[in-house]
Length: 280
Image (cartoon, rainbow, N blue to C red; front, side, top):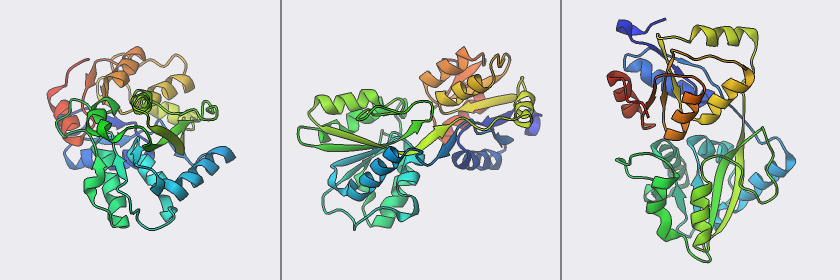
């Protein structure tokens, strides 16, 4: 089904909570949008992960900086006010790879009575919102004796070995921190899982293919989940928007086309939809 004035319907593949926000925002701006979560977020499943998360929540104030890989990481880490102690005396910094994560941190810092100036993120005009563009902003904070806590999500596909930083797309930045002598720790605030697929959902996906739809991908794992639960999935003739070159490459390999590259901020997504974007 086409959206208003012949516009394609936008399929938002983000996790349910984030996806609902995007669907609402797109609808308010004249686009027909539907949520199609291809990643489910759940609490850590293993006792080891839960203990590590509890330990991090108890002692987060002891770190010089906390890096949150997503807005979901912020919400799950500070969920239900499960953070001990008063606001830290030391000037703990809060790192965000993009504006959505920074906005979630602003809410938390307001609750803690901390200034938002402690949030570090790529500049608003950065070519991409990712670790590579965050690093120039925060690199001077890392040196011998400094301690960094990375709050991230884990994949249900594999359980990391002890001491391994499970997750996606942040290993490069963590190596930079370690190379400068910093001590890097990590915890999983949530676990990513594929959605529950049944015949009704598969039929819904089938109805969302073709030239009258465009899929919005903010994670390559969403593309992977789609391929794993539906072997032989064919997206030929279905356009996609990807918020990072790595995600665009995954969508292209899955058969989507054309694949348009956009920054992951709402104004950029809207501008790309309006002009038809550009293929990576």
